Length: 168
Image (cartoon, rainbow, N blue to C red):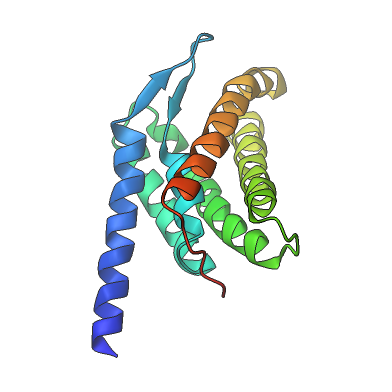
């Protein structure tokens, strides 16, 4: 039992580190002033490899740590919740959907998770930070680009790595 717990702890820590590195180090500028980081792609991919609770912990912790060390620390509380929900939802929906086609299940699961990101940051900006609906809505395009890139990268990563999703 102890070997399993140790393995699980090490694996979870490595996944958190991967999400952190993907958010902190790998930033691709977009043509409209936003930035694509690979944290979401890592969260989506890793969520298929672990339990839904662990996926939530990994997404929340890795992204939160990156956020508090970035110039956007004001988003850290939202990031913790949003990225945790993304990991949880990806795993939950992938394992509950009954499509035969695994790629389609991934696409739908990834899209649901990214919808959480887009709506979550909109709500946080508009109502928690009181930036207003117009300002919050102006960030939706950047978040859509981030979401699309993350879904595409996660699909490719999942296929390249030939991931065997964990059912829970």
